[in-house]
Length: 56
Image (cartoon, rainbow, N blue to C red; front, side, top):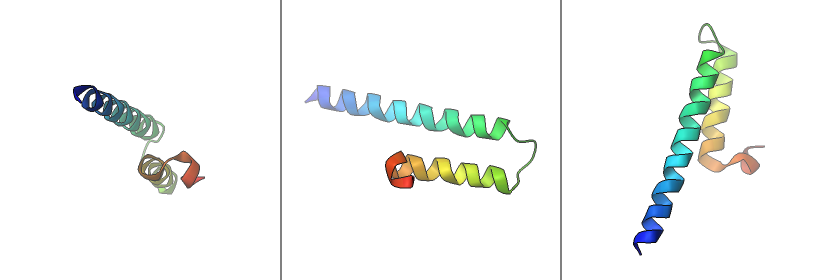
């Protein structure tokens, strides 16, 4: 049973790290907050929430 929770925790950690990395990369590409940045952030949030296949 403990193995299930360990795998779940590892999966959630991987998801969180990927999410934070993508947000950080997006923010670094822009000098200011504009429509393009907001659209990219929205896309990242949607993909993280429902998955890439569903978003596309």
